[in-house]
Length: 367
Image 1 (tube, rainbow, N blue to C red):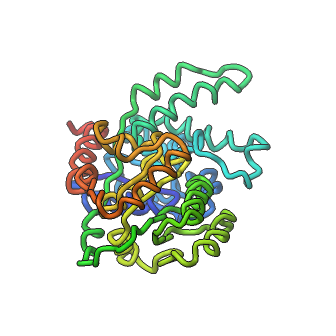
Image 2 (cartoon, rainbow, N blue to C red; image 1 turned 120 degrees about the vertical axis):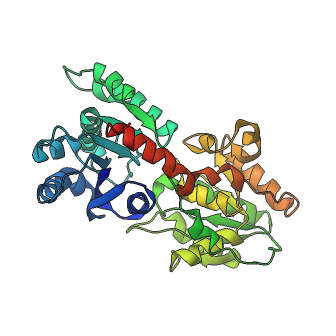
Image 3 (cartoon, one colour; image 1 turned 90 degrees about the vertical axis):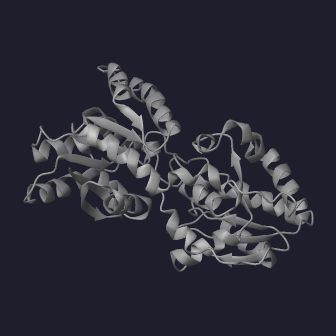
C-alpha cells in the first residue's frame, strides 16, 4: 500500500513522526512537505502549495494522511481526488491550545479561523486520529462551545459525525536513539532535577522555577539541568532563574545534538512537569524511559501513560503538593530510586507501528 503523508510544518515532533512512519512502516510512505516555519501562514496557504505538488506527482497514493496543520478541506477541493481516502492526525489543535498572552489574535477573535480550519478538516476527513484520549475528548468537548458562538446554522450534529470516525493513535517513539546514549554514568551525590521542554509559556516555567527558588531558599541540596529549545522571545522567568540558580546549574540551554540531550536525560534523577498544555508529552516519555522519576500534574494526557495503581506515586494535584513532593524526593535521595521505564516501553516504534499499519490499512480499505 502506498501512503502519501502531507505535512505543511515539517520540523520538530511533526518531522520526527513523519520520518519515523517512512522508516518503520511496512507500507510505502512518501512525504510531501513544506518547511516548518510561519505556522499561521502554513495553515492558511500550505494547502494551496501542497496541492500543486500533489498534482505534479507521477503516481497517486492509496491513502492520504495529513497533519492538523493542513487545511484538508481546501487541499481536497484542489486535488480533486474523491476516491482516495483521506485521514488526518492531530498532534495538537488550535481550538484548545492555549494562546500566548503576547499574541493579539485572540483579542481580535482571529484565533477562531485556525480552530475552524481544524474543525472543517476533521469534518471532511474519512478518519480522524488523535495522539491521546485526552486530546480527542477535549477537542470534541470544546467543539460545542466553539460552534455555539456563531449566529446561526451551527450544524451541531457534525460533532457526532466527527466523534464516530475518530480514534486514538498514540505517538511512536524511537527509543533506540536514547538507548545508544546510555553509559555507565556515576551515581549522583545529590539529585539532579531536569527541565527538557520548550522555553514557552504553555510549559508553565513560572511554577517550575518558583518551586525551585523556594526549595533553594530553604537550603535544599539539588543540581539543575535546563534543556529545551527557545523560539524567539522567551518567558522572563528563564533570565531570573539563570541568575538565582547559577550555583546549582550543570547545563543551561539547547543541547548541541540528540546524543548530548539523551545523555543528560540518563544522568538526571527527577523530572517535575508543570505544563498547562500537553496533548501527549514526548519530552516526558523520553525522560521516564531514561530513568527519571516523574512528578506530573494529574491532568492533560499524562494519566494515560501509567496504570492507576501508581498514580499516587507520581501525580500531584496543585502547586503546593508539587513543592511538598519534590522536597520529599530531594530529602530522601537516593533511597527512593525507582524506574518507571517499563510503563512507557510500548510506545517504541517496534511495537506501536503494528497498530499504525493495521489502522491505516483499514482506513485505505485494504482489510
